Image (tube, rainbow, N blue to C red; front, top):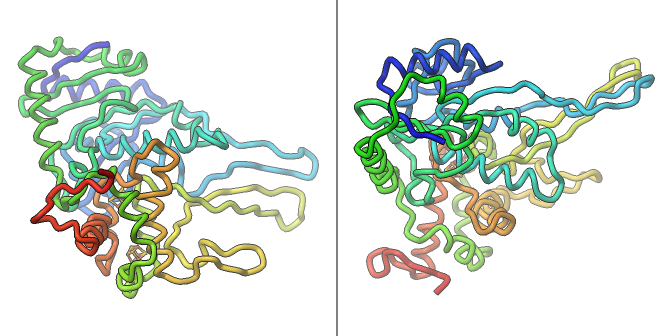
Length: 359
Ligand code: SF4
Ligand code: SF4
């Protein structure tokens, strides 16, 4: 595998080349309706690509787990068949925290019940990740150790100011990079990239967590009956926005629809959210998390305790800050909750700035 250095024009030529070869290419662009926001969308030409973006409104999870997808079709005559997306695609501009979230989803969707729909799309994807140039106003990836990423992508692009250092780490990525008109990166270029990483590991931190991420499960173990959940949830709208924008929320609902003449139908799954009223409603009408406070608490426990139990202790919050942007009453910030709990349990920032609950 190789690492190359491209100046601006050859970089744009390379992106145009990718657009001309891949079946479909999605890249980060200015949002269609909101000029000051960014989104992933079909990339028609290289000059639309904005790898200097701060954060996209929705994470790239929508390409691996679409908001609505048909998973099975059935008919009276033909029986049933699973429906799969087989299209190969490239995704350009994935930030490290979103890559970290995709890496977590890969583990979750491939363990226990292997999810052929998610994993099929994942295997069809070529990911061109890029390091952050402009931090968003609520990012806290430095606190969650996701400001840089070392795996999951095929190519990593780092803007070093005078051009782009581009590294291929898989065969798929190398094939693409071979098509770029570029020289091998020099040791000076690699030093410049290391400086970007060092800076981001420190500075993508608009909300500093006052403990190590690995302390969060232990902290939550102590906090299940804490009054904070009631207090915070008082202003919660149960709108589910914090779930929808989160790159690590993957809950879905499954529903069958049958045609009026009862001869055919399909099974679809669509995004769901644990903050929504009815999320836990089961067949006889019983709802086992009817209170907003229990749903509010569940979201934080899922991210800070339950999912880490399934994926080697990794916290299911990558610090993208999207939930903070999305929450109108401003109560969704996980760092605010964790720091408040640390204070309440006597782990004071001034006396003990980096507590370790596990020692
Ligand atoms: S909980 Fe919030 S900050 Fe953490 S990954 Fe989800 S949206 Fe991003
Ligand atoms: S925490 Fe905020 S974004 Fe989440 S459901 Fe409640 S009001 Fe909506």
